[in-house]
Length: 437
Image 1: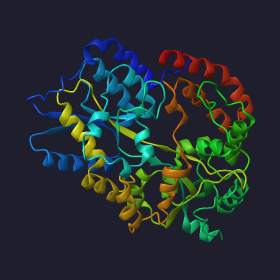
Image 2 (image 1 turned 180 degrees about the vertical axis):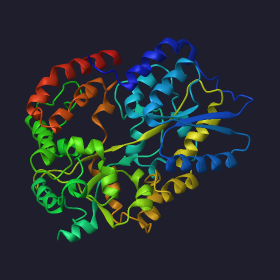
Image 3 (image 1 turned 30 degrees about the vertical axis):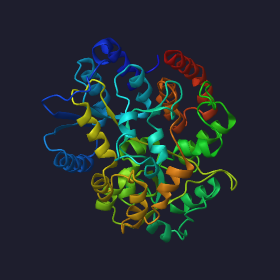
Image 4 (image 1 turned 120 degrees about the horizontal axis):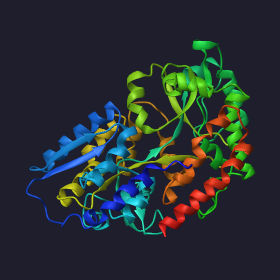
């Protein structure tokens, strides 16, 4: 049985209440100018948003923001319940996989007119990929109307422990020339040492997206209608990632990762290389006691193209908001206001959405990583939006992900696993395409 995605569960609930919520807000403000805002995040992120909300309330006297912070694991269930009860938050975090269902079911507002008529948004000064994540024309993601404003754009980069590198005699990597996979493995072996609780690994579990895309493969074909995981290049990438632990011994096993995650291992100085996003900077500034920096993701061959993913969370506005203007102003303030963006940047939560602030302030900050430009390279050049954000739902992705750990544990090969899930993935993808139509 296929696992239903959060997006599909959300749509199932909202379908019952569409008549009550699609018509939504009248466009007129309520006398009670309280705006509910719901998100998730670490304690550091919650503190950042409390600061930004206070800035918003100062700029817009008379508006009160009711900030609801929900654990990430519970967020979709909470949102689903609130939509079903016709108590949708005025503004809420949205992930890319939920965009199409929430648009087609009339839950979220089209913000295109607001953006067009508001001087707070300058298209030339906001990362294009950050806006395109939230565009949808009814058929093609990345085109058409804007249905959310970017909380951030999260480029997933490869961090390394400079002190472990120096101790192993490994020069700092060239910030623009990636290692090959063979070079990565060879250097990861130099970084791996010790036993038991004192063991240091060369690398954390590797980004499968980076391996697959840099090997010129993908989960789906170019028009996102056919599953492509049995492509030999995809199989090769998946097996290479698994073999970093199974064969090369340079990454923690699945069992070791369950007992102590690589994020903590990296902080403890027990992992040489690990994928991170900008959202980890603040915690690293507080807890990491060694020098660290960013390097390009490795590639299969010297002529291969570097690749990784960028994600993002959007600020969606409920179509049923009783205070639509205040809600839109809050989403825009959090996304684009200079003081709010500066707060987010200085507390290590994100690369600013504003290009000029990134160039003039963020890249010049005297805080690690020194090679902050790698985050920008990913946003502008080598990053890909996740494949599952191009489809109506991600059931097909869940089929793949549910038991891919069996490859990492060595219970099946990559070829065996991809062959075993291909048909079910295709059925789920076909269902998503039919639902979208």
